[in-house]
Length: 353
View 1 (tube, one colour):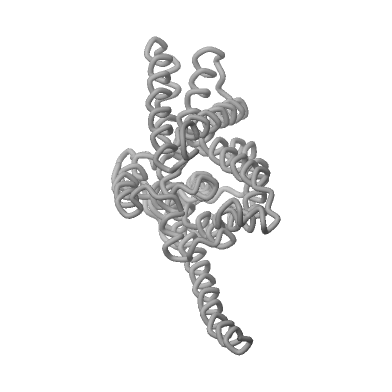
View 2 (cartoon, rainbow, N blue to C red):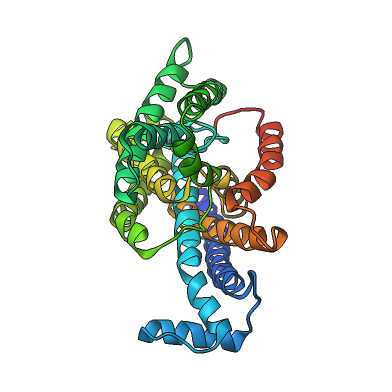
């Protein structure tokens, strides 16, 4: 008996080592992809720039100087939106991974579960009824709207036998999104001034990036990300089933509350400054799960890197295909994400993770 157990452990050890090496390689590839996507974002736009101009623009920006070359000036103007694209993409992908983990739903996503729309409705009401225009006020309104919507969707999806199943949560999110979208239209249509302020924000994009708004959301994003990474081992235990998690000493309610709060906070903070960008939180964790496996200790950080790559490239592509104007990144992610949603639904048949 002991000999058989020893042989089994020896067989598992090389497999575990190979899995760890594969994940490390995936992390390295993801970091390299982030660097490449950042360089592409700095290089392409209304005026393509060379590598030397990128270097000059970055070096003078670090020194706090304004370059004389027009290409380097263009690079400096693209730095804020590139940073916001990286941060927003990482936050949305991390939020989607958390929501998929706590609901055990492969198609959970801030957009599909209605969290984005709830945040948008709160911002719309602030613009229309209270004349709010600051990013700080947008942030708290988005946070309140996203939190209330997440609670409502989970409550509706938990009604009836079987509790919160993937299909019930998806249907509750879709119905809530439709209802809140109607309310957004009802608030905006009689108010042309509010509609003009809101219509660019509603599409979702990073064109309006500036350092003050990013500084406003940065502490909340860091806090939420740290909480998510700390909760990763407990989320692994919950994936095995509630009974097993309790047997392993995991406090299920506290873990789900922390993970849900972190996911909603990440989504709401990004929505406040970049608008409701959909499908990033759906696509990236699903792809990462296929490549690196379901271990949340690896899934969460790799998803953050993948989300940064996706949104940065989407913003760059939007600038190229919309020339001489630009197509917002939210439109590009939606165009790519809709077919991915269909593929995921067909592959999983709405089963829980």
